[in-house]
Image 1 (tube, helix red, strand yellow):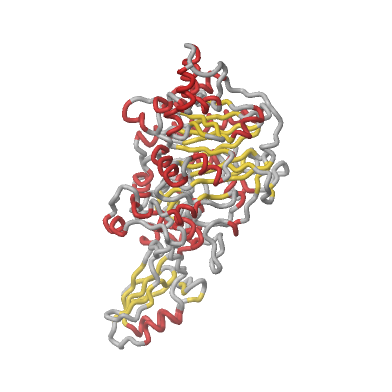
Image 2: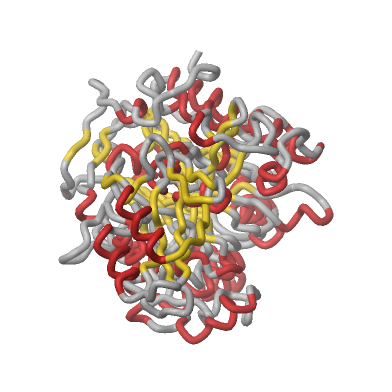
Length: 593
């Protein structure tokens, strides 16, 4: 089955006769999904900058807005007035929420919320539930919300995070009990999510799954030097020319770590260095020939290594390519093929006869990066393969970003904020909009993604850095970069928080891709997708009860209780009816009657 057999990462992008990829047009539904990492704080910034969440969503032309990690409890939304302050009661939209019902230290995390524009609600109505997975323990964590719009069902998902990756990279012989436990929990979460989504499809409904899956399924979904390579038969990636000592089979290591491990430094006199450079083969850089490179004193540089540095002792004239795991200010990997012959000989030309020369060789970075796999393969291999089975050619879903932008590199949605990683664009693509293949996805040309310039095409790493940093205008604190700490707790952006020229750079024409929201708003960027045919769909029956929906809209439930005792508007309120209840003036008039 797809779960146990390897899957070509491009297989999920194969054309499907039932799915249309269409050019942009006016008759489309724009879906936005975003891990806000604490919605109250994000909402405060949005309100301060744009007046209201409603104005913000209208500017993005969002018809469906899914937020993860709201970290808001049901107790905070018990009346319309308080709910309006948090954006739950909103002009032009109806919102539905899933709450974390756990107690103690775990009670202040998780939570998801979905906003649906009124015109979509008016087709068949809208019902919602957080009882999605059929597992009481999982459902009460508030990680998943189902919104039924009749012909369309939207799943808003915040999948569990599995810790222990760095530990497992150091020692894969035995995973911690906690890692094993959370991995099993996450796998069950994904399996039950898929089961419920398939049940909706069997009822004739179309399905969209939005959210933070806490998974990378393609090598391209993480920075090249942070991909992981497996040790097989004592060799890295099973290649005999990459033999290792002291590494156990089935262990993993980062590409950047492996690059350092395979770096060979040779110190010789200048004339010997010239002879060695002359013996190298021009093949994507200066490579060691198949017979190897004898440097003297019994030292042999392995075949296939490339020359990446030439440095003459006590001389400033050097050809020294940066180590491939280093990054320049643009965050683009210095994926050196190696020194050119001319550059190497130039570095040696002015050296005196008695000078010593240091020659640096390493595995070709591009070859090593190509063998790297998504980091989540280390301790979540079954989960990754499960996700890939959903979006394979035999699956029922499409990864909308990968479908439209399969050639784009370094397009990430999450960056570790405490190390200022966004400003180097060292991140991961954890956030997805997966769509039913029966839906008509509106294609966006990769050339239209943010970050392109006259000399950098949008699919390049440089363009991705441009987009993540707004061409270098977003920046972290230099103090934090040096000290590795958070000076103000917010990524060094206090001075940039209210720069509206920078903040406004997030707004783009509705498209399928990534919205590069301001770093101060969240450590995630939003993902987007556009579809045709949703707004004009026929009226269909709803599968979720009113009782379940009231749990997802507690301010409406409280309004219903008030009406039972003769206070408020007439019976049968919906989330939209609660909007009028939130008007303090109207409430005073009703109480005066």
